Amino acid sequence: MPITLADLAGPRHTVVLVMEMQRGVVGDLTGFPELAEACAKRDAIRNTARVATAARAAGVPVVQCTAAFRADRAGSHTDNAPFIRRLLRNPAHMLEGTPAIEVVPEVSDPADLESRRYHGFSPFTGTSLDQTLRSLGIRTVVATGVSLNLGVPGLCLEAVNLGYRVVAVTDAMAGVPADYADAVLTHTVGLLAARVTADELVRAWI
Image 1 (cartoon, one colour):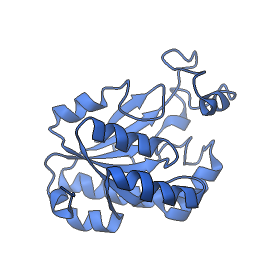
Image 2 (cartoon, helix red, strand yellow):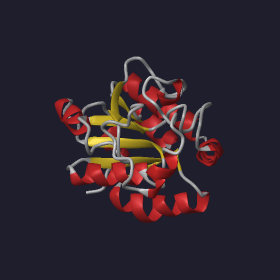
Image 3 (cartoon, helix red, strand yellow):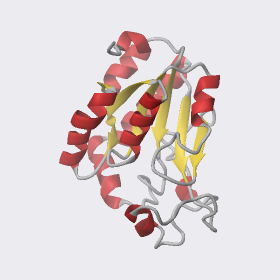
């Protein structure tokens, strides 16, 4: 059955997942300037912040899904994907304990939960995120963040496989290039999740 905004009007059983809205990904310390530019063009950081603020006010939990590496790379698979190999040519990339892994201030709040991962591209596998959500009684996840190239489709697919319903906030996520990101929203994310705008979601929670 399709998800409607009425399903999201109250706080029970719903969570907002913010995917990698980190300073070293899309913020002032970005190592991905094209992605940061795509976020700026879609106003994705501001729209994610609006969704997160409305969620908190409505009693909907917000989970920051973040990525980091230990300096010794322990706990991370570092040679199983071309993209990872390219990232780690920079030995300082997204190291735990550095400002780069902090959530951008517009989106963060001390009350938010955090789910940190050290390998892979999506937030459920190898983390305690699923158990955290089940402990909160969550049935529906609201997806925001980056990127539509890898992380967001992975989030949506894993969530559906685990039995959650998914809502994708289309103007609170980004990918590169822009036409590819739009195609992923339509032809991949659209098969997994209901799609709403930040305005629609905020109105549902006010």
